[in-house]
Amino acid sequence: MANQTMGETICSLRKEKGMTQKELAEKMNVTDKAVSKWERNLSCPDINSIPALAEVLDVSVDVLLNASAKKEEKNQETGKIVNLVLKAVSMAMGIAVVTLSILKKIDLYSGFTMLGAGLACMGIYLFRENEG
Image (cartoon, helix red, strand yellow):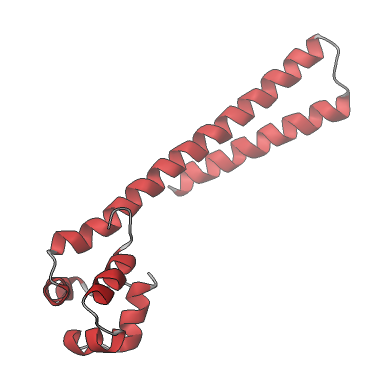
C-alpha cells in the first residue's frame, strides 16, 4: 500500500475484507456516503474513530496514518522539482537574452518574449513559495 492516500488505503483494505461501503459504514456507525467520501479523499474519518476503523480493517493505526504521510512526501518532492525547473527556466532565459544580445543575434521582440517567459516562470515560482 505504498504511496496511497488514506482513502485509497481504506478502499483497498475494505475490498480485501470483502466488505461493501455500506457494511463498513454500519460497523463504524456512519453513513455509506461518509465512507464513499473517505475513499475518494473528499473527507477523512474523525480522528477519534481511526482506532476503531483500524480494528475493523484489521490493521494498525499507523497503516492508516502513514498512507497520507507517504503521499504528502511524494507531493513535496514533486513541488521541489517544479520549483527547480521554474528557477532554471528563468535563469536560462535571462542568460540567453544577454548572450544573444552581446552576439547581436536577437531582435528586440524575441528578447522581450524570452524575458517575459523568464519573468513569468519566476513569478509562478515566487507565488508557489508564498503559498507553501
